[in-house]
Image 1 (cartoon, rainbow, N blue to C red):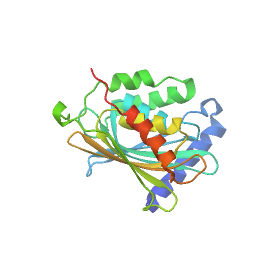
Image 2 (cartoon, one colour):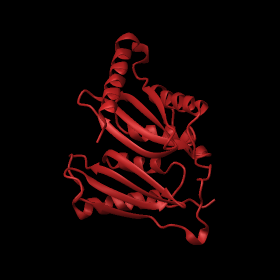
Image 3 (tube, helix red, strand yellow):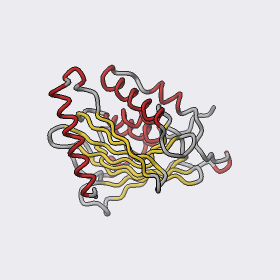
Image 4 (cartoon, rainbow, N blue to C red):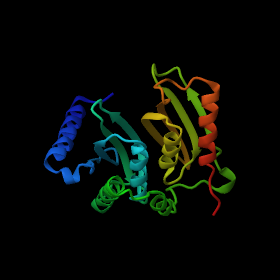
Length: 233
C-alpha cells in the first residue's frame, strides 16, 4: 500500500536521520521533517522520521494541531531498527488550503521542542482547538459519537470506525486514548463532511492481536466516547 517512489523516499528519509545520529549527536533526538504539496488534490503532505517511542503518534498529532493544521489521513510505519516514519496529509485548519511556510516552520519548531525539551502539548492544543472547524453543525443537528469494530476486512488488524462531531484536535484526542490503553495504531483515515467526522483506525492490542473480545471492545468504546464528549462553552 505504498508506491515504489514513496518507498525510495522513505529510505532516503531514514538515511538522513541515521546520518544525523553520526554527524550531529547533539541533535540526535530531533526528527527529520519533509514537506511536499499535492496541489491537484488540495492538501500538503508531511513526513516525519525519528526514533520510535511511547505515544510518539500522539505527539505528532498534537504538534500538527497546535500549528493550526487539520489532519486528513495518517500512515504510521515502524521499522525493526526502531526508526519510525509517519506520513500525514494535512490542510490549513483555517483556510482548508495548502500549508504555507509559516505554519510548516511552526510545526517543525513545536515537534522539535516536544521531542527534545519535553514541552507539554495539552495547553498548545487547547489553544488551537478554540479555532472552530470550517463547518459547524447547529445545536439541533449535533452528532452523537458512535464506535464500531470490524475484524473481517483485515487479516491482522481490527478496524475501529468512529463517527462523531468534527473538531480541531480530534485525532489528538483519539490517539491519546489509544496511547493510554496501549493500543498499537498503524493507519488512520479521516473523513469529514458537513460537521461530521467519520474516521477509521487500524489497530492491535498490546500483544499484537486483533481486538476480538467484547470486554476489550467495550473498554475502548467507553474510553473513546468519554473523551469525545463535546465540552460546553
